[in-house]
Length: 476
Image (cartoon, rainbow, N blue to C red):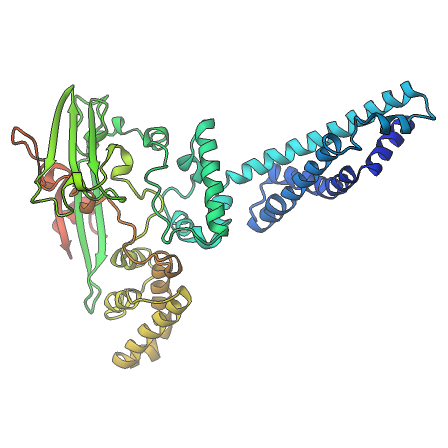
């Protein structure tokens, strides 16, 4: 059954070198890719190595084989529609029967191939949307951002949900941008450090506000920050803030507090002259239809007159304050304090906050050198100043060294020129004071005040045993 058609199909492929090579490649690549795609879609293969082997190694080979097969059919002079080839193959056979069986064989083969390739392409597409693809493919480039992402509050959110979001247009933009970045990576011309994607990131209302709704935020938020003093006892210090998160309107009587900036009845535009949006030269407030322009005085503008630089205009949204919501890089003090809070840094080692801070803030040529030198620095300090401690509690010293190295490794990447404080976090005074500095003034004398109580009430600042803490949490 179908013998003549199969012979026709086989002989055609044999006589066409392009189709023959393409068919061999497809026979080698399609079956394993189909099996792997099924396994990955059903059980989810978490190993980036296997994903790279199949999707970035075998998959392109399969596409190449398919391209060769198509070239053999449509471009080669010995193509499928060549009358000479068809006439030669069916000269001694029943023409109608051969053509009918050939059409059936071809349809069955192509249907099977298309089903398999559809499953493969679908699975490969989802791989390109995965965290492994975004964070681990270009390992050397993306390691800092991927490391920060893994230790962030949004580590369960896929990269594409913020960087691309829904919709075909942004998908196409991201893939075109990705092709350019691949070329930069292969040619070793990518920027170091990788700049924050301020200009090509999707608007926050289309990404952040899919989960977070500032117009529903109502009231206050209590923030308790714990840190350690660089003294012998590594004393606990507390800063307690009552944040006036306020609301973006809607269910409240009026927009107020921090989220006033993004309420529906308020629009804030600002002009800036630098890549990081730190030098703001003009602010425009439109509230309930009333427009107020705040300009920075020439005396206060240390960066020069606005007309002397290229001026950009931006409408304020979530990312103007929450500029590092996921890829969070800490300052040295924050990184060490976090090790204490997590219980990884021993508390009873004298001066360990001070010593570890000194060790991690020295300049190192590479992470490997940092790992070695940090250990040597801390160990030598305690051998010199607390030799008995090293003998009795060497395990604690090693725990402190390990915690210090971790603090460094999560935040500093010399090979990518990322050091402490390379990426500023605007969710702090540094961000607020870009506009709230008493230097912006309107024509009628209104200023953008630097009054900190607009955003928070300071209940305690770097205190060891603040009374308000006992009121809030009680005795521990």
